Image 1 (cartoon, rainbow, N blue to C red):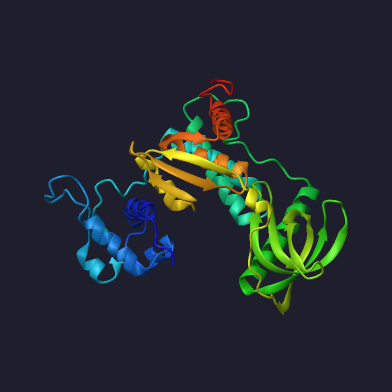
Image 2: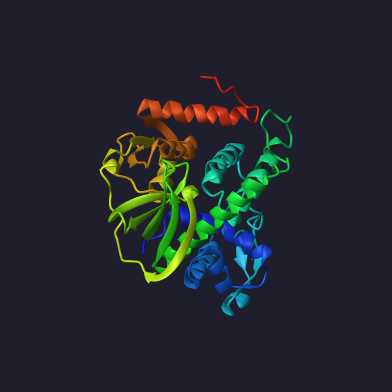
Length: 333
């Protein structure tokens, strides 16, 4: 099991007091379930928070939990020092988050629960961004969603059912029967041992072992008319790199020391500290869109990007995002 990053723990330490304030008297086990960690980790987090606070360490200077409740397995705050309020996003962080949500939305459009959560989160953040400014062209905050046509609703329902079947087969290790339409409009019935869900940055697809082809094949979910989970167990097949994978695009990111969290969250080909104190990370992306999103997520932690074409592409997307909120022209240098 991978060791959790320091960034993940810091985020949890900042979020835990606010969660406890809104769930006063919750058990340690409930907190562990909410944050996806063990009860032992929550206990360690509370012990860390107990010695965190303002300089001096005098009574009232440190975060304090009710000790008796803690010993009994419950959580309640005695002195939150302001941590009972959720951490506020800066405007730059909010803009980056909206941009990321809009990138994710098309990929998860067929997952009803995920799509609804993404739309809700984007709308809430966008409304806050424009609350004190004029509505700009293309602004979607606060607008009701477009009514889907009957055909769109039927297609969405079908796609959701396909995604659910694929996930069930992957989780249960069972074979799938697909009614599939290829890019050339050829319709066929396939039996497939699923390997994993993949994305090209624009579409979700199933990577699986096609029994009729006797080889690995990728099936775009939006081209699957129906998917049936069979009782037959799927044979194990490893996801291996194809020849095309050897041509995956790479980038060199030079980060400030504050950007180390990025190298902890993604797999890097190499990471080294430069004599200037910056961090040089070589990363490989599934495509240019993925690398562009990575550069945008680095934000103010980024010093430079290679190749220059990637830096320009990310800069253009950032300018377009800022222009959507009236903060810059998409053609500014």
